[in-house]
Image (cartoon, rainbow, N blue to C red; front, side, top):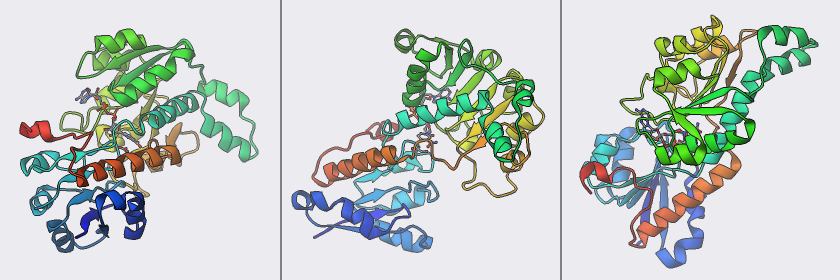
Amino acid sequence: MAFKIVSMSPLPAQFVEALFDPYKREVGDIKVVSVAGLPRDRVLQELRDADVVIGDYTFQMRIDAEMCAAMEKVRLIQQPSTGYDHIDVEACAKHGIPVANAGGANAVSVAEYTIMAGLALLKRLIYAHRETVAGGWPQWRLMEMGTFDLQGKTWGIIGLGRIGREVARRLRPFGVSVVYFDKVRMEDAERELGVEYRSLPRLLRESDVVSIHVPLTRETRGMIGEGELRMMKPTAVLINPSRGEIVDEEALARAVRERWIAGAAVDVYSREPPPPDHPLIKAAAEGEANLILTPHIAGANTDARSRIIQFSIENVVRVLKGGKPEAVVNMDLNGG
Ligand SMILES: NC(=O)C1=CN([C@@H]2O[C@H](COP(=O)(O)OP(=O)(O)OC[C@H]3O[C@@H](n4cnc5c(N)ncnc54)[C@H](O)[C@@H]3O)[C@@H](O)[C@H]2O)C=CC1
Ligand SMILES: O=CC(=O)O
């Protein structure tokens, strides 16, 4: 009898199934059913006899309590990403279903993106490129607008987890002071990385670059609103490669337009893809806005994707062979 894997990612079932080919001799037969885009009742039906569920790497298909209840046989939900805020992990825990992520597999990728974005914002790279291509030569204008070195500045990291630490590590050779805010004070990391703890308001007031690396939770939703943006220096820039709902997008668009801050880079949105009338899309279309908008790719480059896929496939195989999954994020929510 074949193991049944339900895949929620928008990839052909044959493609996902082929990823398991090298393991079929040791595990047995594996059949993959793709449910992306199917009506809800069909999805619930497919979940009933599934052994494993692979989550949606585009985060469009949510896993809610009703879906967890339908997963009568499921031994693992493997999410092929770091974030798992689209999965009701508490409901899964109540049903005894472990949810695992691929946390760490794209931490370096997001850190590199973050530093690239910080430098590009400080130097207004997008504006310089756009104007030059259009036949302009805005050397003086760029200086008037304010373009800066990173050296000698202060970089504020919100969330000193795997990604926040990789950012801090990579900032060392730039000669920057690094401060961080986290719900947990981490003295070992402070010593190892040479970073200093700050309250959130103090970090926002002191930093020239602020980057956000917390997960989306009840506590972090709306963490950066108008009040927080107004605490930042008018020359400071904000980078959000975390989740859209952590920042008030309307307020951020106004902050950049009205120059409360000098610019922002955003990789994630409360709705993905953002509609054409999204406030950040509209603000970016304006000539001089120092806004870099990317389509949720900070942690999804080719290298990161292959690490994520490799980890996810091996974790599923481990469970199908009767072993315990790694990187489980929810069983402690149920005392498990
Ligand atoms: N744009 C992209 O492609 C990617 C985005 N991400 C996002 O980055 C997030 C962070 O990833 P990791 O660093 O691996 O997570 P992590 O779990 O290693 O670190 C998160 C840090 O945030 C802190 N934190 C949690 N709640 C907090 C709160 N209320 N206040 C202050 N600090 C709080 C935690 O203590 C921890 O130190 C993910 O949850 C995901 O949303 C991750 C990978 C790729
Ligand atoms: O957003 C991407 C992730 O890995 O999380």
